[in-house]
Image (cartoon, rainbow, N blue to C red):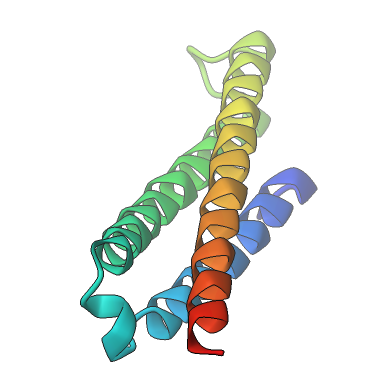
Length: 118
């Protein structure tokens, strides 16, 4: 059972992962692969995809911790959970910000390719 915040985070990560796959496909055209910029984007997309899995795992572990807390597990407090929730929220916010910058770079690059072709 996932809380609303975790569910929203997981959905956002899944959508971002789908976008990365789309970008990778769009940038795998011959003219982009030969450029160093295109190679950089391909590698960056691979890094983002790996990070999606790490963040998803962190969210799932966080939810397991909440489940344990609800079952009144020993050795964990509300404060611990809320602190870890805050840290995870900050991490996801930073990740979303970095991914937005990545998308701007991709769109800028694709726009330059389109202008060069015209």
